[in-house]
Image (cartoon, rainbow, N blue to C red; front, side):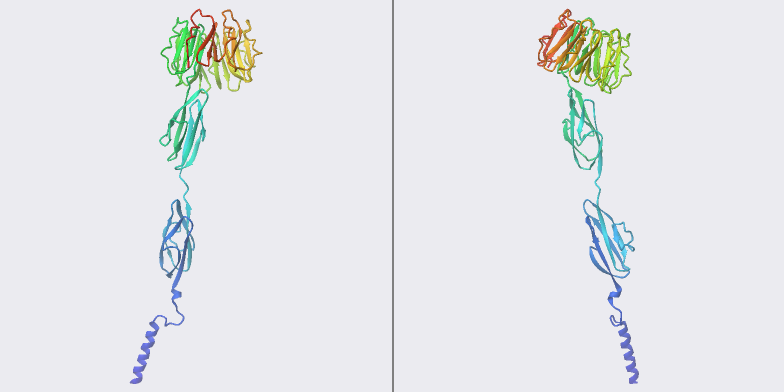
Length: 459
Protein backbone atom coordinates (compact mmCIF):
# COMPACT_ATOMS: atom_id res chain seq x y z
CA UNK A 1 0.00 0.00 0.00
CA UNK A 2 2.82 2.33 0.99
CA UNK A 3 4.69 1.59 -2.30
CA UNK A 4 1.56 2.37 -4.32
CA UNK A 5 1.14 5.77 -2.66
CA UNK A 6 4.79 6.59 -3.19
CA UNK A 7 4.57 5.71 -6.92
CA UNK A 8 1.52 7.88 -7.36
CA UNK A 9 3.15 10.87 -5.66
CA UNK A 10 6.30 10.59 -7.77
CA UNK A 11 4.28 10.27 -10.95
CA UNK A 12 2.38 13.42 -10.07
CA UNK A 13 5.55 15.34 -9.34
CA UNK A 14 7.02 14.23 -12.64
CA UNK A 15 3.89 15.36 -14.50
CA UNK A 16 3.95 18.77 -12.80
CA UNK A 17 7.62 19.20 -13.73
CA UNK A 18 6.95 18.58 -17.37
CA UNK A 19 4.43 21.43 -17.46
CA UNK A 20 6.48 24.09 -15.65
CA UNK A 21 8.49 26.66 -17.74
CA UNK A 22 12.15 25.94 -17.92
CA UNK A 23 11.72 22.39 -16.86
CA UNK A 24 12.01 20.94 -20.40
CA UNK A 25 15.59 20.27 -21.43
CA UNK A 26 16.75 22.21 -24.64
CA UNK A 27 13.76 24.66 -24.83
CA UNK A 28 14.36 28.43 -24.12
CA UNK A 29 12.52 31.81 -24.52
CA UNK A 30 14.86 32.81 -27.41
CA UNK A 31 13.45 30.21 -29.64
CA UNK A 32 10.01 31.91 -29.49
CA UNK A 33 11.15 35.57 -30.09
CA UNK A 34 12.32 37.46 -33.21
CA UNK A 35 13.73 41.01 -33.61
CA UNK A 36 12.74 43.97 -35.82
CA UNK A 37 15.30 46.74 -36.44
CA UNK A 38 13.78 49.97 -37.79
CA UNK A 39 15.43 53.18 -39.09
CA UNK A 40 14.47 56.16 -41.31
CA UNK A 41 16.30 58.37 -43.81
CA UNK A 42 16.54 62.17 -43.59
CA UNK A 43 13.19 63.85 -44.01
CA UNK A 44 10.98 61.88 -41.63
CA UNK A 45 10.74 59.25 -38.90
CA UNK A 46 9.00 56.01 -37.96
CA UNK A 47 6.50 56.83 -35.20
CA UNK A 48 5.01 53.35 -34.78
CA UNK A 49 6.57 51.41 -33.20
CA UNK A 50 9.52 53.87 -33.38
CA UNK A 51 13.12 53.55 -34.48
CA UNK A 52 15.46 51.01 -32.95
CA UNK A 53 15.41 47.23 -32.35
CA UNK A 54 12.29 45.56 -31.02
CA UNK A 55 11.54 41.91 -29.98
CA UNK A 56 8.31 40.17 -30.89
CA UNK A 57 6.83 36.71 -30.69
CA UNK A 58 7.30 34.86 -33.91
CA UNK A 59 4.31 35.33 -36.18
CA UNK A 60 3.17 38.57 -34.59
CA UNK A 61 1.66 41.24 -36.89
CA UNK A 62 3.30 44.58 -36.09
CA UNK A 63 1.83 47.96 -37.08
CA UNK A 64 4.17 50.35 -38.90
CA UNK A 65 3.66 54.11 -39.31
CA UNK A 66 6.12 56.54 -40.95
CA UNK A 67 5.63 60.34 -40.93
CA UNK A 68 7.36 62.75 -43.32
CA UNK A 69 8.73 66.09 -42.16
CA UNK A 70 7.89 69.50 -43.63
CA UNK A 71 8.95 69.63 -47.28
CA UNK A 72 9.38 65.85 -47.53
CA UNK A 73 7.26 62.92 -48.56
CA UNK A 74 7.30 59.19 -47.68
CA UNK A 75 8.66 57.06 -50.53
CA UNK A 76 8.66 53.40 -49.40
CA UNK A 77 9.95 50.75 -46.99
CA UNK A 78 13.20 49.03 -47.94
CA UNK A 79 15.20 46.15 -46.50
CA UNK A 80 13.49 42.92 -45.36
CA UNK A 81 10.12 43.83 -46.77
CA UNK A 82 8.83 40.44 -47.93
CA UNK A 83 6.16 40.28 -45.21
CA UNK A 84 5.22 43.97 -45.24
CA UNK A 85 1.61 44.29 -46.41
CA UNK A 86 2.35 47.35 -48.63
CA UNK A 87 5.94 48.55 -48.90
CA UNK A 88 4.77 51.78 -50.56
CA UNK A 89 2.32 52.76 -47.80
CA UNK A 90 3.46 54.92 -44.88
CA UNK A 91 0.96 53.08 -42.62
CA UNK A 92 1.13 49.32 -43.01
CA UNK A 93 2.00 46.07 -41.16
CA UNK A 94 4.78 43.48 -41.04
CA UNK A 95 4.47 39.82 -40.00
CA UNK A 96 7.34 38.76 -37.78
CA UNK A 97 8.33 35.37 -39.19
CA UNK A 98 12.03 36.01 -38.67
CA UNK A 99 14.54 38.66 -37.65
CA UNK A 100 14.07 41.68 -39.94
CA UNK A 101 15.74 45.03 -40.59
CA UNK A 102 13.73 47.68 -42.45
CA UNK A 103 14.10 51.35 -43.32
CA UNK A 104 11.55 54.09 -44.07
CA UNK A 105 12.75 56.18 -47.02
CA UNK A 106 11.80 59.84 -47.49
CA UNK A 107 12.49 62.39 -50.27
CA UNK A 108 12.14 66.13 -50.64
CA UNK A 109 8.87 67.22 -52.22
CA UNK A 110 9.56 68.82 -55.64
CA UNK A 111 8.51 72.50 -55.49
CA UNK A 112 5.28 73.50 -57.21
CA UNK A 113 6.07 75.51 -60.35
CA UNK A 114 4.03 78.12 -62.17
CA UNK A 115 4.42 79.66 -65.63
CA UNK A 116 4.90 83.37 -66.28
CA UNK A 117 4.22 84.50 -69.89
CA UNK A 118 5.54 87.97 -70.70
CA UNK A 119 4.96 90.14 -73.78
CA UNK A 120 5.02 93.84 -74.71
CA UNK A 121 3.31 96.29 -77.02
CA UNK A 122 5.13 98.27 -79.67
CA UNK A 123 7.46 100.93 -78.30
CA UNK A 124 9.54 98.93 -75.85
CA UNK A 125 10.43 95.56 -74.44
CA UNK A 126 10.72 93.61 -71.21
CA UNK A 127 14.44 93.20 -70.54
CA UNK A 128 14.17 91.37 -67.21
CA UNK A 129 13.50 88.49 -67.30
CA UNK A 130 12.73 88.80 -71.03
CA UNK A 131 9.78 88.02 -73.24
CA UNK A 132 8.64 84.38 -73.41
CA UNK A 133 7.18 81.85 -70.97
CA UNK A 134 9.24 81.17 -67.84
CA UNK A 135 8.78 78.60 -65.04
CA UNK A 136 9.26 79.54 -61.39
CA UNK A 137 8.85 77.84 -58.02
CA UNK A 138 5.70 78.81 -56.17
CA UNK A 139 6.17 81.89 -54.02
CA UNK A 140 9.24 83.16 -55.85
CA UNK A 141 9.45 86.95 -56.27
CA UNK A 142 10.45 87.75 -59.85
CA UNK A 143 12.02 91.06 -60.88
CA UNK A 144 10.37 92.83 -63.83
CA UNK A 145 12.06 95.55 -65.89
CA UNK A 146 10.44 97.18 -68.95
CA UNK A 147 12.40 99.59 -71.14
CA UNK A 148 10.81 102.06 -73.56
CA UNK A 149 12.28 102.97 -76.94
CA UNK A 150 13.48 106.58 -77.41
CA UNK A 151 10.16 108.00 -78.62
CA UNK A 152 7.95 106.02 -76.25
CA UNK A 153 6.93 105.97 -72.59
CA UNK A 154 6.13 103.00 -70.39
CA UNK A 155 2.44 103.07 -69.41
CA UNK A 156 1.67 100.06 -67.20
CA UNK A 157 1.51 96.30 -66.78
CA UNK A 158 -1.74 94.57 -67.71
CA UNK A 159 -3.03 91.01 -67.55
CA UNK A 160 -2.71 88.88 -64.41
CA UNK A 161 -1.37 91.73 -62.30
CA UNK A 162 -2.82 90.96 -58.85
CA UNK A 163 0.59 90.12 -57.37
CA UNK A 164 2.61 92.81 -59.20
CA UNK A 165 3.93 95.23 -56.61
CA UNK A 166 3.28 98.38 -58.71
CA UNK A 167 1.57 98.05 -62.12
CA UNK A 168 2.51 101.63 -63.01
CA UNK A 169 6.25 101.16 -62.46
CA UNK A 170 8.52 99.90 -65.24
CA UNK A 171 10.76 98.32 -62.59
CA UNK A 172 8.76 96.20 -60.17
CA UNK A 173 8.21 92.60 -59.00
CA UNK A 174 5.63 89.86 -59.32
CA UNK A 175 5.09 87.07 -56.76
CA UNK A 176 4.38 83.66 -58.25
CA UNK A 177 1.27 82.35 -56.54
CA UNK A 178 -0.11 80.94 -59.80
CA UNK A 179 0.46 80.86 -63.56
CA UNK A 180 0.27 84.36 -64.98
CA UNK A 181 0.31 86.17 -68.33
CA UNK A 182 1.32 89.84 -68.31
CA UNK A 183 1.99 92.58 -70.89
CA UNK A 184 4.16 95.69 -70.66
CA UNK A 185 2.38 98.57 -72.37
CA UNK A 186 4.06 101.55 -74.03
CA UNK A 187 2.78 104.68 -75.75
CA UNK A 188 4.36 107.13 -78.16
CA UNK A 189 5.60 110.35 -76.61
CA UNK A 190 4.08 113.64 -77.67
CA UNK A 191 7.35 114.90 -79.14
CA UNK A 192 7.06 118.45 -80.51
CA UNK A 193 7.55 118.70 -84.26
CA UNK A 194 6.84 120.88 -87.28
CA UNK A 195 5.58 119.71 -90.67
CA UNK A 196 5.12 121.49 -93.96
CA UNK A 197 2.06 121.35 -96.11
CA UNK A 198 2.23 122.83 -99.59
CA UNK A 199 1.15 126.28 -98.37
CA UNK A 200 0.55 125.69 -94.68
CA UNK A 201 2.57 124.76 -91.59
CA UNK A 202 1.60 122.32 -88.87
CA UNK A 203 3.00 122.14 -85.35
CA UNK A 204 2.64 119.38 -82.75
CA UNK A 205 2.88 120.49 -79.13
CA UNK A 206 4.27 118.43 -76.28
CA UNK A 207 0.77 118.08 -74.80
CA UNK A 208 -0.51 116.31 -77.94
CA UNK A 209 -2.44 119.27 -79.32
CA UNK A 210 -1.85 120.73 -82.79
CA UNK A 211 -1.42 124.17 -84.33
CA UNK A 212 -1.63 125.16 -88.00
CA UNK A 213 -1.24 128.37 -90.02
CA UNK A 214 -1.36 129.24 -93.71
CA UNK A 215 -3.65 128.41 -96.60
CA UNK A 216 -6.96 127.15 -95.24
CA UNK A 217 -9.32 126.99 -98.21
CA UNK A 218 -10.19 123.38 -97.48
CA UNK A 219 -10.08 123.61 -93.70
CA UNK A 220 -6.65 121.99 -93.54
CA UNK A 221 -5.68 124.28 -90.66
CA UNK A 222 -8.77 123.50 -88.53
CA UNK A 223 -6.93 121.30 -86.08
CA UNK A 224 -7.62 123.15 -82.85
CA UNK A 225 -9.70 120.30 -81.42
CA UNK A 226 -7.13 117.57 -82.10
CA UNK A 227 -5.76 115.93 -78.96
CA UNK A 228 -3.52 113.03 -78.03
CA UNK A 229 -1.60 113.36 -81.30
CA UNK A 230 1.89 111.87 -81.55
CA UNK A 231 2.87 112.77 -85.13
CA UNK A 232 1.61 115.12 -87.86
CA UNK A 233 2.19 115.88 -91.52
CA UNK A 234 0.91 118.28 -94.13
CA UNK A 235 -0.08 117.47 -97.70
CA UNK A 236 -1.08 119.49 -100.73
CA UNK A 237 -4.25 120.79 -99.05
CA UNK A 238 -4.83 118.38 -96.16
CA UNK A 239 -3.39 117.65 -92.74
CA UNK A 240 -3.00 114.27 -91.06
CA UNK A 241 -2.13 113.08 -87.57
CA UNK A 242 -1.54 109.84 -85.69
CA UNK A 243 -3.12 109.43 -82.26
CA UNK A 244 -1.45 107.54 -79.42
CA UNK A 245 -3.88 104.65 -79.89
CA UNK A 246 -2.70 104.09 -83.48
CA UNK A 247 -5.72 105.62 -85.18
CA UNK A 248 -5.47 108.48 -87.68
CA UNK A 249 -7.23 111.81 -88.13
CA UNK A 250 -7.29 113.90 -91.29
CA UNK A 251 -8.82 117.19 -92.40
CA UNK A 252 -8.82 119.32 -95.54
CA UNK A 253 -9.22 118.60 -99.23
CA UNK A 254 -10.85 115.21 -99.78
CA UNK A 255 -11.61 115.26 -103.47
CA UNK A 256 -9.63 112.07 -103.96
CA UNK A 257 -10.62 110.52 -100.61
CA UNK A 258 -7.19 111.24 -99.24
CA UNK A 259 -8.79 111.97 -95.86
CA UNK A 260 -10.67 108.65 -95.63
CA UNK A 261 -8.47 107.23 -92.92
CA UNK A 262 -11.03 106.81 -90.15
CA UNK A 263 -10.81 103.01 -90.19
CA UNK A 264 -7.02 102.82 -90.03
CA UNK A 265 -5.60 101.22 -86.91
CA UNK A 266 -2.21 100.20 -85.56
CA UNK A 267 -0.54 103.10 -87.38
CA UNK A 268 2.83 104.37 -86.14
CA UNK A 269 3.51 107.00 -88.84
CA UNK A 270 1.38 108.87 -91.36
CA UNK A 271 2.46 111.12 -94.24
CA UNK A 272 0.56 113.29 -96.68
CA UNK A 273 1.42 113.61 -100.36
CA UNK A 274 0.04 116.13 -102.81
CA UNK A 275 -3.32 114.33 -103.03
CA UNK A 276 -2.75 111.02 -101.17
CA UNK A 277 -2.10 109.75 -97.65
CA UNK A 278 0.17 106.91 -96.57
CA UNK A 279 0.24 105.07 -93.25
CA UNK A 280 2.91 102.80 -91.78
CA UNK A 281 1.59 100.01 -89.57
CA UNK A 282 3.41 98.53 -86.59
CA UNK A 283 3.95 95.24 -88.44
CA UNK A 284 5.94 97.00 -91.18
CA UNK A 285 3.20 96.95 -93.80
CA UNK A 286 1.82 100.08 -95.47
CA UNK A 287 -1.62 101.41 -96.40
CA UNK A 288 -2.53 104.30 -98.69
CA UNK A 289 -5.59 106.19 -99.95
CA UNK A 290 -6.18 109.02 -102.40
CA UNK A 291 -5.09 109.99 -105.88
CA UNK A 292 -3.37 107.09 -107.61
CA UNK A 293 -2.98 108.06 -111.23
CA UNK A 294 0.77 107.43 -111.02
CA UNK A 295 0.56 104.36 -108.78
CA UNK A 296 1.70 106.27 -105.70
CA UNK A 297 -0.78 104.29 -103.57
CA UNK A 298 0.39 100.87 -104.76
CA UNK A 299 2.08 99.95 -101.50
CA UNK A 300 -0.03 96.94 -100.49
CA UNK A 301 2.80 94.48 -100.98
CA UNK A 302 5.42 96.42 -99.03
CA UNK A 303 6.77 94.69 -95.94
CA UNK A 304 9.51 95.27 -93.37
CA UNK A 305 9.13 99.06 -93.74
CA UNK A 306 10.38 101.35 -90.94
CA UNK A 307 9.67 104.79 -92.48
CA UNK A 308 7.48 106.20 -95.25
CA UNK A 309 7.58 109.60 -96.97
CA UNK A 310 5.39 111.37 -99.52
CA UNK A 311 6.07 115.09 -99.85
CA UNK A 312 3.35 117.73 -99.94
CA UNK A 313 4.25 118.53 -103.51
CA UNK A 314 5.21 115.05 -104.71
CA UNK A 315 3.42 112.38 -106.69
CA UNK A 316 5.49 109.46 -105.45
CA UNK A 317 5.81 107.44 -102.25
CA UNK A 318 9.04 106.16 -100.74
CA UNK A 319 9.60 103.50 -98.08
CA UNK A 320 12.70 102.66 -96.06
CA UNK A 321 13.22 98.99 -95.22
CA UNK A 322 14.85 97.71 -92.04
CA UNK A 323 17.84 96.44 -94.01
CA UNK A 324 18.67 99.97 -95.20
CA UNK A 325 17.35 99.55 -98.73
CA UNK A 326 14.65 101.72 -100.28
CA UNK A 327 11.47 101.12 -102.29
CA UNK A 328 9.43 103.65 -104.26
CA UNK A 329 6.26 103.86 -106.35
CA UNK A 330 4.52 106.63 -108.26
CA UNK A 331 5.54 109.25 -110.79
CA UNK A 332 9.01 108.55 -112.11
CA UNK A 333 9.44 110.96 -114.98
CA UNK A 334 12.64 112.33 -113.44
CA UNK A 335 13.84 108.94 -112.13
CA UNK A 336 12.89 109.91 -108.58
CA UNK A 337 11.79 106.31 -107.98
CA UNK A 338 15.05 104.74 -109.17
CA UNK A 339 16.17 103.91 -105.66
CA UNK A 340 17.28 100.29 -106.08
CA UNK A 341 20.93 101.25 -105.67
CA UNK A 342 20.48 103.03 -102.37
CA UNK A 343 21.88 101.03 -99.43
CA UNK A 344 22.93 101.77 -95.89
CA UNK A 345 20.10 104.29 -95.61
CA UNK A 346 18.71 105.27 -92.18
CA UNK A 347 16.24 108.01 -93.21
CA UNK A 348 14.50 109.09 -96.41
CA UNK A 349 12.81 112.24 -97.68
CA UNK A 350 11.07 113.33 -100.87
CA UNK A 351 10.91 116.52 -102.84
CA UNK A 352 8.61 117.29 -105.73
CA UNK A 353 10.59 115.24 -108.22
CA UNK A 354 13.51 113.83 -106.25
CA UNK A 355 14.26 111.40 -103.43
CA UNK A 356 16.84 111.86 -100.71
CA UNK A 357 18.52 109.31 -98.44
CA UNK A 358 20.57 109.77 -95.28
CA UNK A 359 23.28 107.16 -94.84
CA UNK A 360 24.46 105.72 -91.56
CA UNK A 361 27.78 107.55 -91.85
CA UNK A 362 26.06 110.97 -91.92
CA UNK A 363 26.40 111.52 -95.65
CA UNK A 364 23.52 112.11 -98.06
CA UNK A 365 22.53 110.75 -101.48
CA UNK A 366 19.80 111.91 -103.86
CA UNK A 367 18.19 110.76 -107.11
CA UNK A 368 15.77 112.45 -109.49
CA UNK A 369 15.42 115.94 -110.95
CA UNK A 370 18.40 118.20 -110.36
CA UNK A 371 17.32 121.29 -112.27
CA UNK A 372 18.21 123.64 -109.41
CA UNK A 373 20.95 121.54 -107.83
CA UNK A 374 18.61 119.96 -105.32
CA UNK A 375 20.49 116.68 -105.64
CA UNK A 376 23.95 118.22 -105.14
CA UNK A 377 24.33 116.86 -101.64
CA UNK A 378 27.27 114.47 -101.95
CA UNK A 379 29.63 116.79 -100.05
CA UNK A 380 27.41 117.05 -96.98
CA UNK A 381 28.68 115.36 -93.82
CA UNK A 382 27.67 115.01 -90.18
CA UNK A 383 23.97 115.05 -91.16
CA UNK A 384 21.33 113.68 -88.74
CA UNK A 385 18.08 114.60 -90.52
CA UNK A 386 16.86 115.44 -94.03
CA UNK A 387 13.80 117.07 -95.63
CA UNK A 388 12.65 117.81 -99.16
CA UNK A 389 10.67 120.68 -100.65
CA UNK A 390 9.77 121.74 -104.14
CA UNK A 391 13.11 121.31 -105.93
CA UNK A 392 14.86 121.84 -102.61
CA UNK A 393 16.77 119.62 -100.17
CA UNK A 394 17.63 120.64 -96.62
CA UNK A 395 19.53 118.86 -93.89
CA UNK A 396 20.14 119.21 -90.16
CA UNK A 397 23.69 118.77 -88.90
CA UNK A 398 24.60 117.30 -85.52
CA UNK A 399 25.67 120.72 -84.25
CA UNK A 400 22.16 122.13 -84.75
CA UNK A 401 22.93 124.08 -87.92
CA UNK A 402 21.17 123.59 -91.27
CA UNK A 403 22.30 123.31 -94.88
CA UNK A 404 20.19 123.46 -98.04
CA UNK A 405 20.53 122.99 -101.79
CA UNK A 406 18.20 123.74 -104.71
CA UNK A 407 15.60 126.32 -105.67
CA UNK A 408 15.48 129.50 -103.59
CA UNK A 409 13.53 132.13 -105.53
CA UNK A 410 11.48 132.83 -102.38
CA UNK A 411 14.41 132.65 -99.97
CA UNK A 412 13.40 129.20 -98.78
CA UNK A 413 17.04 128.11 -98.82
CA UNK A 414 18.10 130.94 -96.51
CA UNK A 415 18.81 128.74 -93.52
CA UNK A 416 22.54 129.31 -93.16
CA UNK A 417 22.18 131.36 -90.00
CA UNK A 418 19.94 128.95 -88.15
CA UNK A 419 21.33 127.47 -84.93
CA UNK A 420 20.02 125.39 -82.08
CA UNK A 421 17.74 123.47 -84.44
CA UNK A 422 16.49 120.00 -83.45
CA UNK A 423 14.11 119.24 -86.34
CA UNK A 424 13.44 120.53 -89.86
CA UNK A 425 10.65 120.42 -92.44
CA UNK A 426 9.82 121.90 -95.83
CA UNK A 427 6.67 122.95 -97.65
CA UNK A 428 6.22 123.86 -101.27
CA UNK A 429 8.21 127.10 -101.12
CA UNK A 430 8.91 127.58 -97.42
CA UNK A 431 11.12 125.87 -94.84
CA UNK A 432 10.82 125.43 -91.08
CA UNK A 433 13.06 124.62 -88.14
CA UNK A 434 12.15 123.67 -84.60
CA UNK A 435 14.57 125.06 -82.03
CA UNK A 436 15.58 123.37 -78.80
CA UNK A 437 13.52 125.88 -76.78
CA UNK A 438 10.35 124.89 -78.64
CA UNK A 439 10.19 127.98 -80.81
CA UNK A 440 9.91 127.83 -84.61
CA UNK A 441 11.94 129.63 -87.27
CA UNK A 442 10.91 129.84 -90.93
CA UNK A 443 12.18 130.99 -94.32
CA UNK A 444 10.71 131.41 -97.79
CA UNK A 445 7.31 132.52 -99.06
CA UNK A 446 4.61 133.79 -96.71
CA UNK A 447 1.98 134.54 -99.31
CA UNK A 448 -0.58 132.35 -97.49
CA UNK A 449 0.59 133.12 -93.97
CA UNK A 450 2.38 129.78 -93.77
CA UNK A 451 5.30 131.37 -91.93
CA UNK A 452 3.18 132.94 -89.18
CA UNK A 453 4.54 130.56 -86.58
CA UNK A 454 7.03 132.92 -84.96
CA UNK A 455 5.04 133.01 -81.71
CA UNK A 456 4.73 129.23 -81.41
CA UNK A 457 6.22 127.47 -78.42
CA UNK A 458 5.70 123.76 -78.95
CA UNK A 459 7.29 122.46 -75.75
